[in-house]
Image 1 (cartoon, helix red, strand yellow):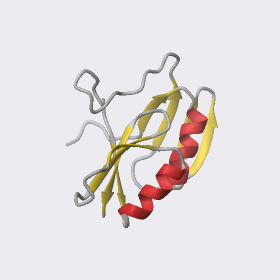
Image 2 (tube, helix red, strand yellow; image 1 turned 90 degrees about the horizontal axis):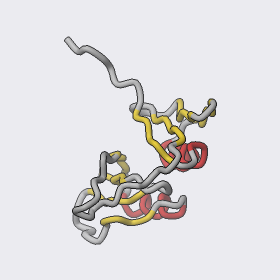
Image 3 (cartoon, rainbow, N blue to C red; image 1 turned 30 degrees about the vertical axis):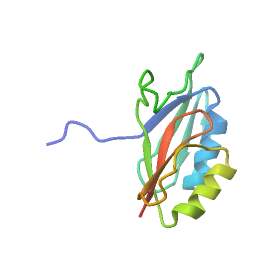
Image 4 (cartoon, helix red, strand yellow; image 1 turned 45 degrees about the vertical axis):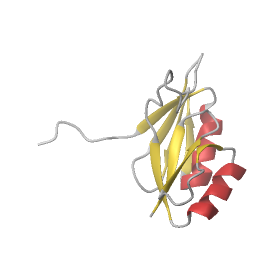
Length: 119
């Protein structure tokens, strides 16, 4: 028997409202702002939340001296189309050169790594 259930994944960032807006555009859902905390509600999958982190330092993946800490795998139907959309929303490419792979790696506007994965 499990001890707990995963309630949400919380991302530290310098601007919770802005990062929630990025993920709302990528995943759908409604941005709900609270004091120092923002939830992304109503989407499919595990909910995301965003909290202000003064002094936030983004992960430095894939550098060996900087851990990615964690990453999100986002399943998409069309890698090329999804790539165009996330880049237009402010994502940056971390590792998408191998176009034969079933995934590509990006960073969100706050620097957190995420993968677009072929569904």
